[in-house]
Image (cartoon, rainbow, N blue to C red; front, side, top):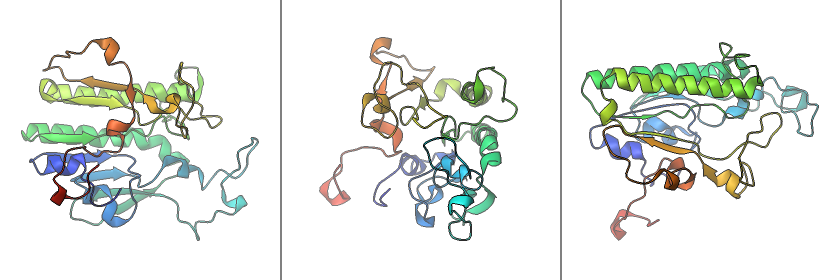
Length: 264
């Protein structure tokens, strides 16, 4: 993300909101571009992408896709494994773990635990908050927490959906228990369509295309809004699907005067 862009977190922080994020950033991994330098008070997560969890261990393949482990040339001495950071605004991010397959399985539980704590902490203090909770699931490698492995009887993908449903429920329960449900706008969405890589393929329903394409199967993604204290005035059939562009990049769009910088 270019540094002249303004994030939602920066706008809300300027209005007195507490801002927190837990999960994947992937908008710049240099220190100056990490979340706590882009409007977030606190962050736990990874700077890039979850498929890097496979680097240390995926040495062999039986499919058309090449393996990416150290037997094929990857070495931690040349390219460091992806770190898992913990950070607060005004402080240097601290590496608390390395992203590997084992830690990737536990990311959802830790993301949720921290998000729930943030919600309860700020609600009890009477402070408005913006919680950005980009779950790791169902990004490849699609691996559930061991507590959910085998629960559905339909494989890892279904187990991951069950876990994501449970974690989402934990966040919604925290909002309700904190007594701020009617005043809290919740947006649940995906940033792209299904993966096409074996064995983590998803389903795009009637739409053609997958992630990494410009087809509708990639660009049409779930978008659900819940705000109990407000009326949903648009008919459901007009709200059942969304183009990915409006919010996926975490940047607000607004009119700018010429003196304020680029107009996009």
